[in-house]
Image 1 (spheres, rainbow, N blue to C red):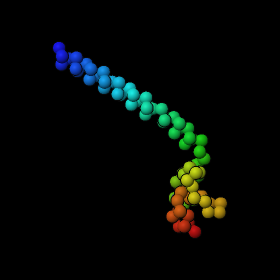
Image 2: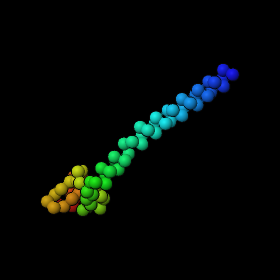
Image 3: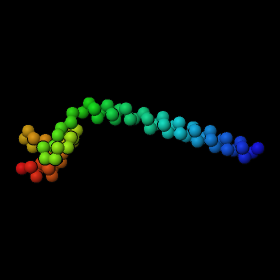
Image 4: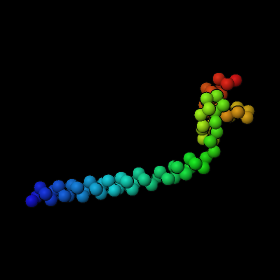
Length: 74
Ligand SMILES: [Zn+2]
């Protein structure tokens, strides 16, 4: 009887841990998605990769994903 109680207790603890984990991991995700969608994406002139405007490298009016590609396109 004692073992059965212990198993039930372990199952309850496991379910609670799972619920807490779900609660904490599911909350920040919609925020991240929103900020990613609201940010303007720019295309690298060299490789064609789309990069968020905040991390873009600008040379005159051209946009690049990194310094290396800005130099390679010159
Ligand atoms: Zn690039």
